[in-house]
Image (cartoon, rainbow, N blue to C red; front, side):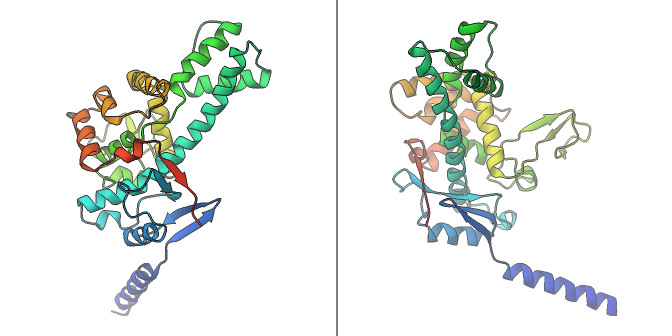
Length: 297
């Protein structure tokens, strides 16, 4: 009896501590990194830094980056309001990933400018180009200057920002708005798989499956991996072509243009229609119109 009372007391202390726990956050370089928080605490943080409604913001979003979904996310009722909170969590993270991609593009554009001026690349610049080629799965059998020029051409379509609305809407669809076991346990928002390894999360519906779901350190890593897939995999050739054409016209890619080209993206029935519906219903248009991140104080 005394042992049961002791265990019950420990449980009470545990839940009391849980209720009184504060969000774990870190301010760094104009950003707020939220390492752990409840849904209510995330909403309070958004309100504090003037991030109430992504549809009314003039294309600037605060640098608030969640490492993972809120600790009580699974217990929150699945409503449109919850979906909109998920969207607000996702947008800054996608834009942060895009910033890193665009920093690589800036290097690429410098190399392209050198070749337009008929200048030779240094050994260091050639090494950087080859690293980009390996990362973004660009290759050619040509050698020498012809190889350099061909790689620069191939990479022009590959190293670029991914349309935020596509990234956000597919994360919502594939992770069931963050409610899936895979999203909650593995930070895996896009059903990313790893084959013939035991390091991932086992699928529950197939004990003998040869694949596992990837486990990511945080949400940003999952988004970055997804962006790289869109920028490198053959299934997204037409997505990249449309994006490249938009850039040449100095226009942001329009996500509804791309939805029909996402048919090879998933086994989900009518995935293109689901993406298009999500884009329209949740008003994701502003996220595609040259969005930027703003520092917080």
